[in-house]
Image 1 (tube, rainbow, N blue to C red):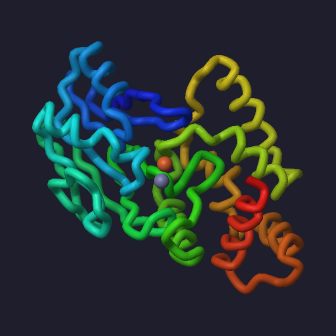
Image 2 (image 1 turned 90 degrees about the horizontal axis):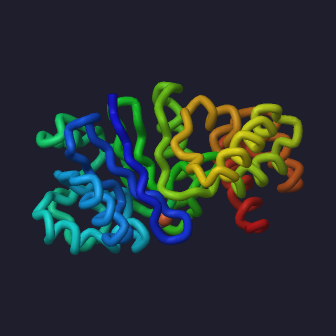
Length: 257
Ligand code: ZN
Ligand code: FE
């Protein structure tokens, strides 16, 4: 069983520290800022053994150099992207073996938010950076709607119990949009209440089980009749396939943000 510590950073980023319970060792996922990570590591006397990076954006990479220098640890990240301090470029299908931790993760390339975005899957969890968000998905900065749709379909095929660890706390705003798309979806209504209760207690709403995403995340529901008809109404015409539905729902959200 994995233990994943949460280090909040900036306004709404989460830096995740996976490790085995009681081992005192962790990996660091997407350290956009070194300072809160250092505070947590020293505060709990944790030993970091590796850094895992999902994509090149500064809010995921800004802390790499100072952490890697201080601890002299390897930095894994997508081979397709320019990432400062990267020592171990990874590609789709690779396995990242973290010997010091007794953990391994497989690499799934999920282009869309960025060209080379990587996710790390293993031990029942998914670190998905800015590809899948709880109740939403990342903006298409570099990839096409078809690429992002394909990436999200691959994530959807993981076991339903997989815990989704995304890199931002966006759930409440994402659910407001989900309800615009599917006003009659009872799972979305229930999740809005659950998220409001957790946020009122200042708790993270991440992770969430993939099953909950499949029921409430419009970007994973592009094959459901309710989302297809909402997207077609928004577009004003019939949509040919799931990628076209995805593209429309993404444009719809971008127009409201
Ligand atoms: Zn990003
Ligand atoms: Fe980000």
